Length: 172
Image 1 (cartoon, one colour):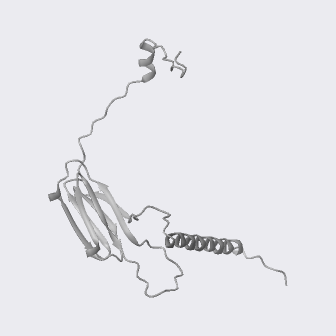
Image 2 (cartoon, rainbow, N blue to C red; image 1 turned 90 degrees about the horizontal axis):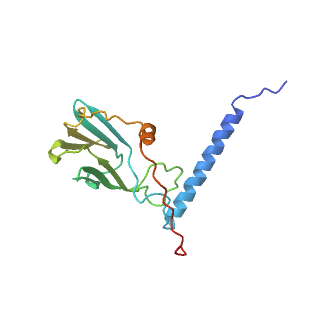
Image 3 (cartoon, rainbow, N blue to C red; image 1 turned 90 degrees about the vertical axis):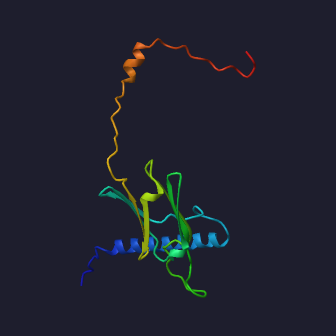
């Protein structure tokens, strides 16, 4: 009986190898962290969606596994900052096969449009999602177009400047 070629043979080998490399990289990162070294910033940044709807700016920050008491929300000088920590709790000496979620301290800062006041901001936490609504932000601004002059035309009309040569270190 002739041997039939499996068209997915190389693909499955590729995925197996990619998975192996990813696991090897994860173990290396964890080992560095155990030794006190950091492979990334000291705080992780949670995934965030920001969009405008009906004259409101809506900010949704994913914080699954974080307790509401572990979340701090502050507004200072036009910057909204959400920070806190997600506890690493796998029990006593687990056999860890995959760890893709971030643990420890997190921080996400968002600059709000100029003129935003504290009274415009409401926030809720539920089902692992912080939702912040900023009222009166989503409207169009009074932006106007600024015309640019063609620099090549302006340069042709200007007198040429002499070039200044740097002095030598010998004092010439």
